[in-house]
Structures are given as C-alpha cells and as structure tokens.
Image 1 (cartoon, protein in one colour):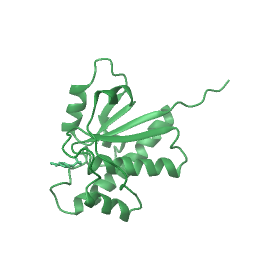
Image 2 (cartoon, helix red, strand yellow):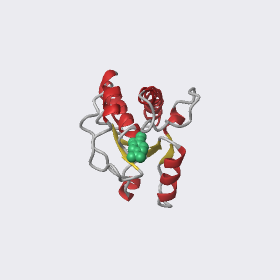
Image 3 (cartoon, helix red, strand yellow):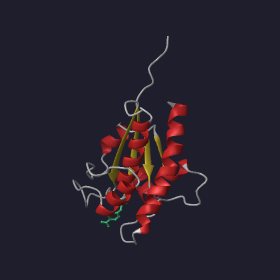
Image 4 (cartoon, helix red, strand yellow):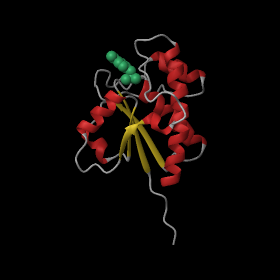
Length: 162
Ligand code: 4NP
C-alpha cells in the first residue's frame, strides 16, 4: 500500500515582509508551480515586525521580481504569529536577527526546522539575505539571485524528505 505524500509547509521570514520574504515566497511558489508541486508544498511569508501589515511588497521588490518573471503584486504583509509554529514544518529566516526572533518565540515543543534560508545554498559566500530596504537598487537584484539559489536547494531537500 502506498501513502500519498503529505503536504509540507514552508514559511519565509524577514523583518518587514515587504522585501526579502515576499520575494522568497514568490520565487519559491513559481518554482513549485513550474514543477506541478503547488498542492504538495505550501509556501507563505511573514515579518517579525508588523509595521507594514496589509501592504503589498515594496515597489522595488515587485519591479525587480517582474523583470525575472515573478509576480509579487498579490502578496500582502503580515506579522509572525504563534499559530505559525503549529502550521509550518520549515521556518526560514532571511538573516540572523530574524532567526533569533524565531527561536526566541518558538514553543518548547516545536518539532519543525528553524534556520537560515541560505543554509540551502551552501555554495554561496553569503549566509544572510541582506536587507535591501535602505540601500541602492542593486540590492533588490542580489536578493533575487540569493533567493533563487536557496529555493533550488530547499526544493531538493523537501523532495528528499517529503
Ligand atoms: P524586509 O525589508 O525585512 O526584507 O521586508 C525591510 C522592510 C522595511 C523595513 C526594514 C526592512 N523598515 O524599516 O520599514
């Protein structure tokens, strides 16, 4: 008897949920759609701060993503909440400070994986996705490059452990 593969749930986490984590959500969702895996793997994103709750991604993130074929326009920011720990198998932070928040807020019995998203791109020199919000335009392109590389690694991991 063969069991159906269960749904795997992934949450991308940054500070404001308007630049890095919605980019990760959009890129990873497109990867899933292109492989016909969107019913088997669920992706979402949130911020550890609630400053931009309800807002679409930063226009610079939307524009950079669009140039590479990703549509972020329908995404809306939301803050991390405790239910996330009971929903997501993987909670992936864009940088060390958001990783610290994820660990600090984690229930003692959380059995999923909390870590850095770029751990899934071990060949890159970076360990963190740099915050592009206050920087020049190039930062948004670098976010996309890093996110694309880690998305491939994450998908390989999920397919191996699914
Ligand atoms: P994100 O970038 O964490 O990648 O969404 C930021 C967005 C907004 C702010 C900081 C970082 N902010 O200070 O409002």
